[in-house]
Amino acid sequence: MTTRVAEGIRRWRPHTTERIERALDASRAGVLLVGARGSGLADLVVVAAQYLTCPRGGCGECSVCSAVAEGRHPDVRILSDTPSIADVRALVAHARQSADRWRIAGLVGIERMASVAPVVLKALEEPGPRTRWLLAASAIPPELTAMASRCVRVQVDPPSAAEIEAAVADAGIELSPRLLALVPRDLELVHTLGSVPEPGTWLERWAALATGAAHAHPAQIAASLRPPSSLPAPTQEALVRLGLAVAIRANPMDASWGQAVRRASGSLARRLSIGLVLAELVLERPTPAHGYTGRSAPG
Ligand SMILES: [Zn+2]
Image (cartoon, rainbow, N blue to C red; front, side):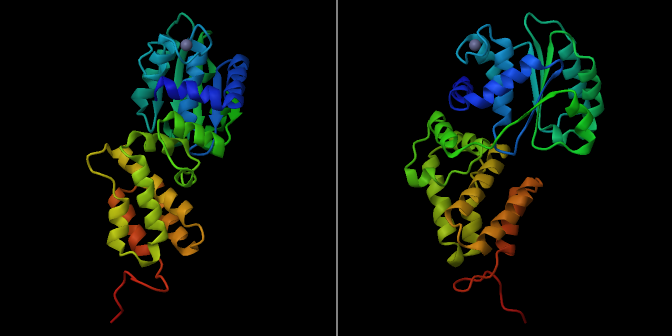
């Protein structure tokens, strides 16, 4: 994440960032941000780390804020996805060391980290006087409730249409109002859109795919959604997710199309390969009333 994004978040999500700052002031061990996927939790964890570390309370402009945003500040360490137990033990050791201002340990996506919960819980029970934990989760499963109870909890709302518009502008993406309306309310996907060349062309392609879906050849659908293999794997996955989300928004009236796309999105959430997801989308697509059916007649 760039410093510009963090700075933007303070500007266009002032109520959310203020609530997180007040929670940090009131916390003994740390804060837990809870919000649906796409509500920008990873960015907000960085903003929270800047609030504690920056001498100006998280200005988003100084060298300290830049170092935090770029993951190179020595007092701040943030892990995401599914870190190993060794990674988390190293994070706990990091959290115990002394710091000028704060020693900060972050875990984004703790709902996927149940196996490391006991290690984190122990650290949260004995936080150092200058240590703060920043945790973020889309949900709190039962095995994480003890961990959650040690933190001051902040519920993060999904981004509004105005916030998405601001995030799109901050990412340097220029879109017509028609294409802007197709961008899903998911800040992670906005970041993805900002990281690919010619984002408007992608949106056009997905929108055309959705409106022509009933008559499209299955191979055409899969080809339209398949991202360039030159992109890193996480970007490819995010791009397919974005394409599927846009396809639903572009053609909300076609319920059967929406169902097929949602099933494909579900497969992606279960971390199947992109090829399998595209195959599933094609195979499970309901037979349209007119046009190409995608299935050969039985017998
Ligand atoms: Zn600063």
